[in-house]
Image 1 (cartoon, rainbow, N blue to C red):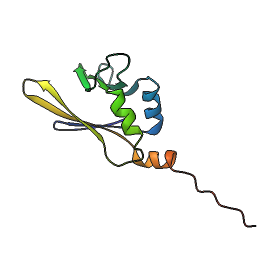
Image 2 (image 1 turned 180 degrees about the horizontal axis):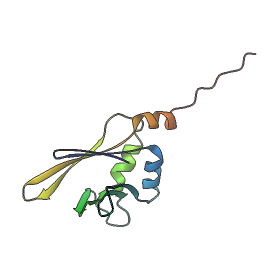
Image 3 (image 1 turned 90 degrees about the horizontal axis):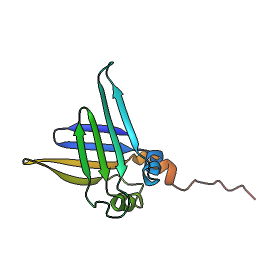
Image 4 (image 1 turned 60 degrees about the vertical axis):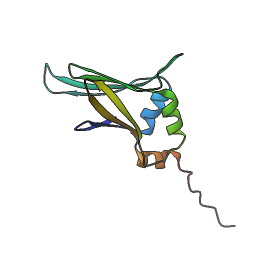
Length: 124
């Protein structure tokens, strides 16, 4: 998973293998260690079970983020791949703060994984 943060925008980009893991109910983790006592990590999951939220959530504390995306929205997005647009959400963080959250699958990886293979026909 690749993370890009700029101002009040967060972009999470996964490859096809990570998308498959998410759709299978697994958690995708990105972790950076900056010394013995400093770690920065992001966990990405899809909502599961009955009553799973239709809105994403972002919980951040002590250098760790937990992002949960709505499964239905990600499944619908996956059905459109490969594509260049992101699945975009706007989250209300309270106290008048908002953040834009963009989730996308690497388009080059999707093209390699999802595009039909060209078959050369043998001459007759």
